[in-house]
Amino acid sequence: MGRTSSVIVPKGRSLTPLSHPGKASIGTRFGVLPFRDVLFLILVIAVFASVGFLVFNAGRDTTFYWDEWDFIQGSRRGGLDVLLTPHNGHLSIVPILIYRALFASVGLRDYAAYRITLIAIHLACCLLFFLLARRAVGRTLALLMTFLLLLVGNAWQDLLTPFQMSFLISLATGLLAFLLIDRPSTLGKVVAAASLVVSIGSSGVGIPMVAAAAVLILARPDRWSTIWIVMPAASLYGLWYIADGVPQAKLSNVPHISTYLIRSAAGAMGGMLGVGTDWGLILVPIAVAFLSLRMCRMSISPSMAASLTVAGTFWLLIAMARASLGDADANRYIYPGALFILLIAKEAFARMPTPPLLLAALGTMTAAAVAANVLALNAGVAQLRDSAATVRAELAAVEIARHVVKSDFQPDSLLMPQVSAGSYLLAVTDLGSPAYSVATIVHSPETVRASTDHVLERAELLELRGVPSAPLGPVPSPDDLLPLERQGGSCLLVSVPSSGISFTSPAGGMTFQSQGDTAVHVQLRRFAGSYHAPAVPVDGDGPIFALKLGADDLAIPWHVKVLGSGPVRVCGLSG
Image (cartoon, rainbow, N blue to C red; front, side, top):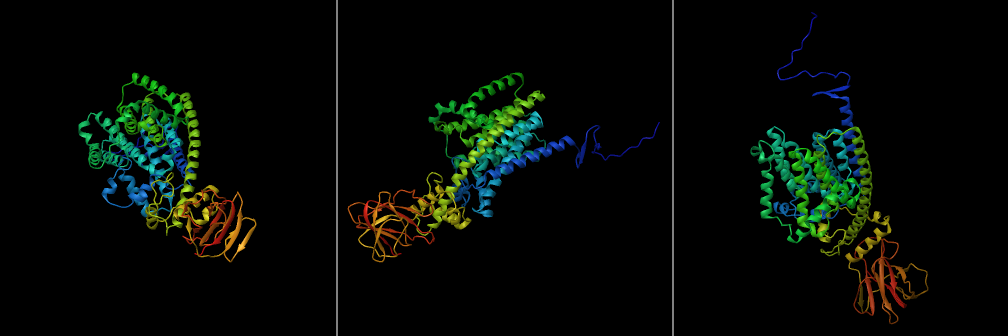
């Protein structure tokens, strides 16, 4: 017999081979990682990093959007009462705290930090889904499914507007709880319980996540010894709802619920696959038929029951609150709906053979869906950028008029209805300004410059006021080459054509006096190249009408277009 050698292995350890026969491998601290696994890990990292960069780059030149202004103006200060105040019916403690941390660190000047936070939460959500799906369908199919969530561009609000981190935090922490519930360690269960508290403390989307976690636990043999995992979240939410919650469900929505549920599922399905709600209405019955066939051939697993619970609870809660509004396929609901559909899909494909031909077909479908969603993302980005440019220019107008603007002045009731000048200027004092500089406005598109003029005109309360007389100042400078007559040192007599006549106003303003029986009206511009705003309001009967300017110290002069007919005496007004 030949000699053999032996190696003494410490108790509790096993000897890990350095390589597998016929398979390249790389040693790690915990053993050997086959080379194919290394390549797959590199692929996953590259995909996630690329998506993060793509979404970040897409969101450049955007700024605070809609509900974010509520956090800026109303929630950045205050104690527990502010944290517990419902936001559109949601408990939003966690997002408010994150925004407060960002306010303290980067203020309002650096919107990139807010977007990076959202993207990080989105990538975490996708990674957690991938880990869940890998358990059920293997890593290749799991990665294909994850692609559909990574670039769900039809849900561009959830990818590009940081306020939507409220939904995504609820989803990510809920998924983390799903992963940890099955862990044997007590620490894992404690973290799962804490994750559900964070989930329900971020938005109402946490409610279906807690419900699904309860289903997972009740399906376990040790259900009664682990049900405590959901109790902190459920109890805390129940106490909050009793004390501060605002009921959202309406009986008037009951007749519309079934239609709303169908359109919700169709919107999520069509949005995820990049084909829209109409195609989703065709695909949902097909998916339901496939799911029914699969469920007839296999027992319903706890994960499938939980997946059906989370989707059904989410859509039902929204329907009870909003069915009459007809927004079932609203952009912000596509991301959660897509995730829930994917959770159901990974259970439907579990233990199902996936030959290479099927994987190729699914890969082709995924590629087409991602391409369509990238186009949708670009369309959403264009909308956000246009909105952001207008908002930032209009906010600059408020800041220019800070010494005269009224506290309750609203610069734009459509794009930022929550914003009032007083609260906004206080936030700027504390946190810095997100507004454009004057130099940026000057080089902006005409529509943006026109919006700035219109807001500035309203903020400074510019109007034609009837006065018996007015102190004269420097003579106005005509912008048009039209016949005019000099009258004294400060006045001009002009015959106004039907198209009007334009002047560069002295800093103090101008006065106008019709030499006939016709009324005089004026339009203004300061940044814009043409006159877009309606004529300024008229107050009083004259005979002289004064347009008083000089409410700010901006060096750029106002241009005034006189509208009327016949001779008008135009004079400079003393500041």
